[in-house]
Length: 268
Image (tube, rainbow, N blue to C red; front, side):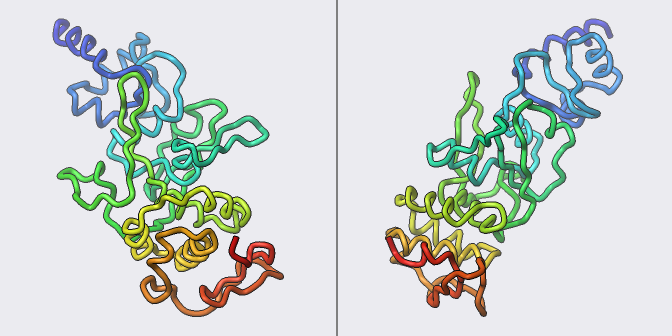
């Protein structure tokens, strides 16, 4: 038994430094609860919270957290401004010095995530913005319906993080307008996203569960003369019925039925 445990201890080296694993993963690899407890007591495993462990090593970064969640087969991905920031399209560092990382997924976020990385605030977006199956990394047999994902290699092991594409990330940002993201910020983002792919934008907008996001995207795309916006419109994308007053004292954009700030009501 001792040799068997020593062999398993050596196999812990297969867990890269920084990768968080849960009890289910360890059990599947052949580690009993008693053995895990022994390794944690000896310092060979670091216990973050009940059921969450990592090999001792350098401090965690948010990328470690995002990759670990996906390795746990949990439906979370970095999206919105976080994904756009990875592509050089947005940067979010509040005056407090704490980086904000936006994680999208409707499942319960494990408790260890909140305090995993000092000076990083993880914000979960649990609303299901798109009508689609769970992410392909969650499903046991995979899924060919991959809509709006980008592969982001990171770290010395070239871990592959699945993050939102520019198209998906932008729509995720629009979901927070105007409650958490201002119109001017959304407009500035739109001005720098002129290479969005028309076919992907059409697919995402048609599967989008928010008429507000559909309307905002088409309006901003038209305002900034995006090529994809010239190919779409109310006749192709269902915008629902009625008007949406998104700001008081604004101006109504009749074509899209939304009220926006007056200083943004004209094309640029």
